[in-house]
Image (tube, rainbow, N blue to C red; front, side):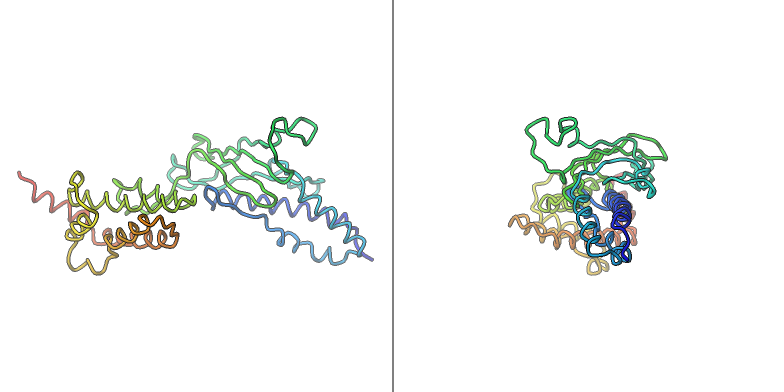
Length: 310
């Protein structure tokens, strides 16, 4: 004797909503602008295999009908109370606390949702599925805005624009822009260009990322060689920088000049080479880590002090 399809369906609705909440949390904590996660439907279905396996063929057809209707519906957005497994549940996108970088606190902190809205629902005529304006969207396309606030400092809130397209959830916007945590040994005078390079790469703008990375390298080398205002080629600047390094270290450090040339070549050819950017970032970070280990900035400061007339 098979179990009622309604029992398996009720369990599915609860587990699906829990999974969607987990995937939304994963999206906000680990993904970047224009990146997405997909609600893990197979994982959800895997939790009900013992029950669904006991269904009669008729109950199985009924379960499938309810299942398809459920995931093809419109998400209601709300708090964790919607995950109460003992309540009759509708399709829900549940917002929970997330771990985000707080620029005021200087680290990753717990952020709580303080406001949220279904934008697409606001565009519909009340009581109907018809849009108020000339806007075309299906029941499985939604835009949500969610506002989070750091629980520690209760500072200025952070706002996310989240798109739902069927089972896909993506970050389509955020304010303020995501803070990128960089190693402490990246020089602070040029750090803004390194950070912009990483942000551009994470948002899919590879050429812009390569441009910012080359700018970072060149401006650092210009500062270290006092060539900020000189009309010098990139090759001349990088050779002058290499000459400032101790001879015993030059062959042990990734060459900034080499990676400057590789990035420049990609830019000249408008080559959106993601692997090049990742390799360049790794090697450039290693170069500055070695500078840190050997305390080259202090050495440079001492040499500059000795060469300055008293």
